[in-house]
Image 1: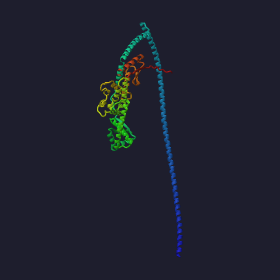
Image 2: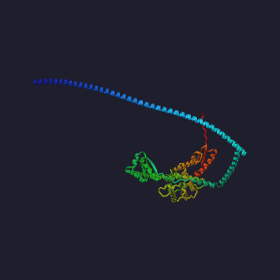
Image 3: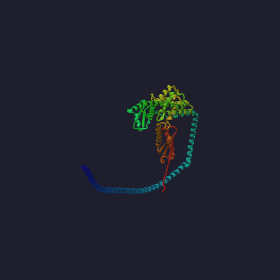
Image 4: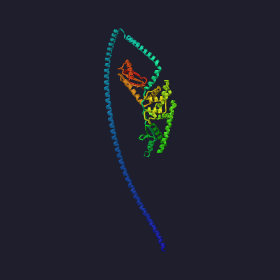
Length: 513
């Protein structure tokens, strides 16, 4: 009985508690919402106040910037006005100066006109006196001016004609008697007058690198790669700040070539270590040996020299790696051989002997790094070893004047050597000598009185002399040209002849106003 009363009571109590809880939570929620609304309203009011303050600050800043800009603009306008005023002042000064100069020129023009009138009067007086003197001379000589000139010219022409004819007959007679002998001697010894100095060598080679990173690989760890390469080739490797390049330094051109080829092969292969370096150096040596052999055979074939010992052919090929003042010694030897042969044929001498001696004349330069002595001494010793023709040996020994030549072919080798070395552009020293010759030619011309300026043209084959027209007359030009030619013949050594061209120019300038 009590159970049925308690259960409903409990249920009713729970329901009442739930209702009370719901009402409480609602009130609590309404209270929080009201607080949030008040907080939001407060924040909005605060934001409006801050925005208003920022707006006022930005307006103030903008006004300040506008004021500053106006001040700067006013300053700039003031400065420009000052510059304009200065320019106006300068223009006014220039105008005043021009006016003063114009007045000065007008005064000078009036003075010049006055002096011109005075000079004209004096000239008329002088001309009158000159005519009076001529009349007196004609009366004394009983000849007119034209008659006197004609008589003098006839006498001079007669003397010159007879002398010229005598000289021509004598020269023709002498030329007929000694033509063949003189032709050979003059051609041989005239060419021989050109001399060539002993040459110096190129001592460095440059190998290009794909990048600067390759320098570290060439050096290797603790420098073992570069040490191995220098030891195997006998060449110094210079690795400095030069971008993408390595310099090979050494006096032996063959060793430099081997080192260059080996280094290029290593760079292309990409594997650089002591064992690979040794392998590439051996390959480079074989390649250089093959090149030497092929170049020697090419030179022998090109010049037509036969019967040479194989070792001599190899030595000729080595000359490919020698230079003389920038001129390749192998090409120089081939050129000397061909020149000597051509001159021997023209002079009816032995062309085979001439071309053989010409090809072998610098053979000692292939061994002068390995043997003591000059290249002439070494060449003679080598040719004697291989039992070469004694006449060829004499030509080689005599091509620098160490001994007297025994044959005309030996003289031709001297001449061909000088021609090849003195050819324009063949050697660096030739340019210096050429420039010096041009300078000497101009200095000789400038040393004469009345010369305004001189110019050496046509590679030194002509000198053009401009004279002062008020110092040198037309008749004096002929004498000046002859005197300059005589001085050039006395003071200078040169092949062929030099033309002396004297120019006299008078210019009269006037202005139409």
